[in-house]
Image 1 (cartoon, one colour):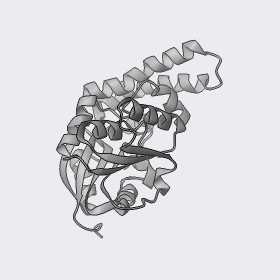
Image 2 (cartoon, rainbow, N blue to C red):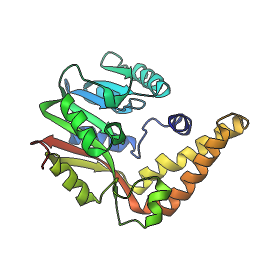
Image 3 (cartoon, rainbow, N blue to C red):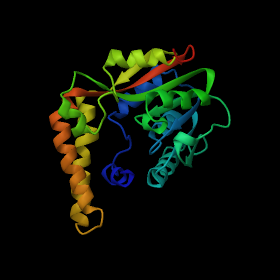
Image 4 (tube, rainbow, N blue to C red):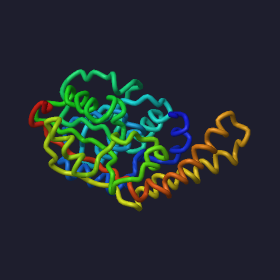
Length: 249
């Protein structure tokens, strides 16, 4: 599956349904500034760390499984002249052990690294300073989806909650929601629909590639599930959270 995303998102800088404007807005509302030290788990192409280093003077470290994405992250850091402020490491973000506390720990759209939201919160909490922030990118249900949506989108029925149900999950983990920036239909379209063009061009260039059948199926499934269910029922946002206690229960 990682290989499919490396191909489909080859032309993306932000590997989530976020625009450049929303990414910078997130940095602003999170009060990122000179000296803010950030850990980004499953950092993808490192766009958040690189842009925030350039725009706000932050420093950071990113961890990701994809060597393809990390190569792009290094190139982006050089392009923005922030290679001295950000570092990247190839590895399993779910097994990463931070060398010291960070002011901010982020995991945007990859809470699978900890087996779900609750497990990922604990991974992030262990790397954050006591007064540090957690930035979690997570889907939520806009409306109650039909049963067919779960299979089409590949999610278990309880994988995600409504927006207020997501708040319940944060509070049960001992977190206080202090800010958020949500995707909108246009940013979703740019993230998902632009992948179809990338895949089309990739298949046209090498239709006999061993990955071609899987990529055709990936694009066909993406189109159908996105138009039938994703765009109507599934939201996504980054939630800025303050640690206030241990999990309830």
